[in-house]
Image (tube, rainbow, N blue to C red):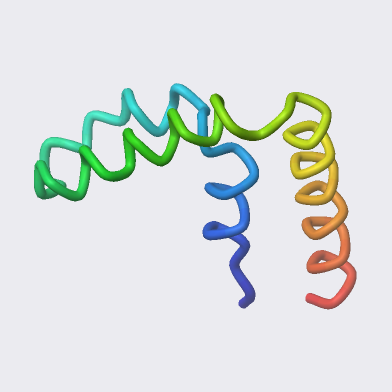
Length: 69
């Protein structure tokens, strides 16, 4: 079964759900800090219209995978 998790985290990098997941206590602090930094970079450097395009593209990818499954 295909997965789009990596594409989802890229398209929604700044989503608060990634920062508030209780399972993050199990992630190495350095890795967690890197993820936090990357989430901030996404919000700071990706123009809002580009972020919307990434998110719409993710929706298209989901539909495509569903058709192929």
